[in-house]
Length: 420
Image (cartoon, rainbow, N blue to C red):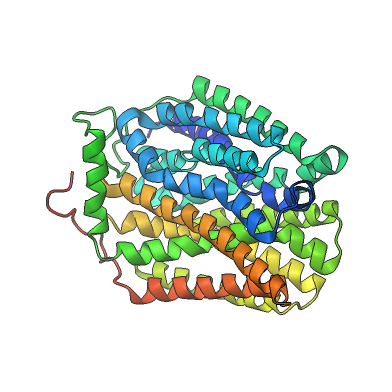
């Protein structure tokens, strides 16, 4: 890449990252809004989990179709077409006086945000050399985590001095600005000669929508896909279930923190979480050792959740949350592992399936932990102990599946016969 093309690629990537950052805000609002929403709508823990999970159900379910959209229409058109739904969903959520409308608003936001990070990963794969994929992806994840800072102290202050509705309206205004920036600054450039990825969506021939859907079968026929998907469904889900749903209630109800104090902790978790992905992107040990690192860090995070479940005190709960924030950066290694596990012709689809698994996993974990919390409360058990042990157990199961199910050969396999 020339210096000029490199600057242009970075400018467009950072512009796309504004949408990703806002999607991070949307997916973590529940942790700060939870207590007010429970009061205003008389929500049970299970309903709160449904509210938090609605975004991720919609977000994850649309990943395959967003991948097809990127293949057929390109990065720019896909995100510009979908993103306005996030704006509408934020307004609907802010105006809701009924729980069903609140959930519907979250579904719209999830659909609108669905391409937000996928377009970044595809853009990186197409515009940067393959050896820089983990590093650039990690940096993008770190910068995008700025969105979680907004749902810490700043949003807590807005909610404390106004209401949770104003929080949604503020995010809607930011989303309008992001759409405008992408419209003016991003274009679908052809892949650079040294970028390893599937053919450009601008290059013929373009597959039909039905053909693109069928093409996912080639990916699912590979035996190592199951282990990758199993782990993807619990790793980011564990971090988002803590940071995006249970952190606020945990600190407020278990330890008596105020809303702003819990927001301060959320900011600290978000700040340290910003540095994790770039750090792990630089420390990427390569294809031969990467999977062992992933398994080890997954088990380490599971152990932290298990310790927090035992109610070791406010200080250790805060420290544990911060450690989860730092170590969550190893998820960028999963992206690199996924990219290395498939041939270049399957990169876009592999990233779409991985992202779908990751965010459907968030939705399921947030919903399921809400159910666990309701059952625990009904039977007189410690709600947070039940929730945190559940997350620890799911992480352990995901690590076991990743370790014992078939692994991809190194180097990446050739595409199966008949795949596009």
